[in-house]
Length: 366
Image (cartoon, rainbow, N blue to C red; front, side):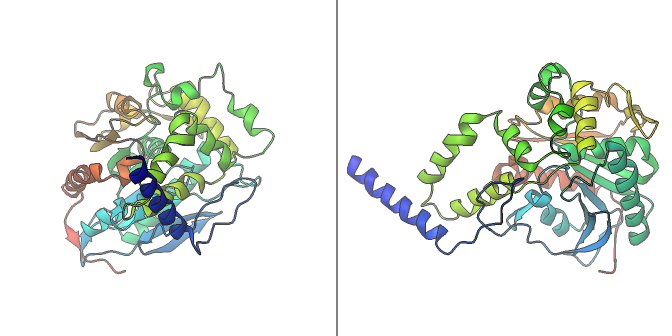
């Protein structure tokens, strides 16, 4: 047995060496000090149709002759990069919607610098509002559907409360919305007794990407710093395993810097004060009242999500007025929701739910 396992380890080592042979790495700097293999991600075709101050709006090239009347806008978190939703063709949430006949758009927030002192007000009331108005004009519609992932779900919910007239359907994917102390996950990590975001941001002038990557790893340190790499080695000889593993590693470590005031606002007002759900959040002086949200709303959760535990998203449903609510869940974690094979069937159900609420299919110019 020991001899056979030794042979397997030799084979695994050779597979790993073969995978790295001739491989290029992404450039690194003080904000992303990681050695990241340059693996292909985000391969679905898209075009940039609008930008403002480093924030970009993309439209994905349709994959069907006709698309549903109501466009779908994906609002990602301010942290990390949105290609996790299009990690590779066989596991692409974006491609799933395109193949079903949706006209899909995405906001890419970009990499903040010391000059980008944007607040939560700026991201919701300026960028999101401006970009959605542009989509309405571009696609010749009066409303859009919004899918918000993680922190992007918070931005989507805030926008929907303020500009209900512009939103047809709201989808909240592992969204950070409800912050009761019992939620756990990042709520515990952001406890104001132990964490003051202003004190951390002050020396940098922004939130560096490495801090966010390492902060999330501390929720499961043994897994993130040791056991997953042991698992990687033990599975190195399985077809396609290393490609998927290093795509995930790229996404985890290929982060973006976050504008300081937006981060401070989100942590203090939402995580620490639960201001969104309690109706105490204000954007540019306008009260964000979740009870105003009476449109079709779907929440999409992972049963084993440790970053945004199910209650983090589900609790928000009790704060809105919508009578058309749906819950979709899969036995996966935060990222598994968009890359795991165990979530594929769930996404078929999500697509079906949204298609029934997006009007008829029409021809749109590419």
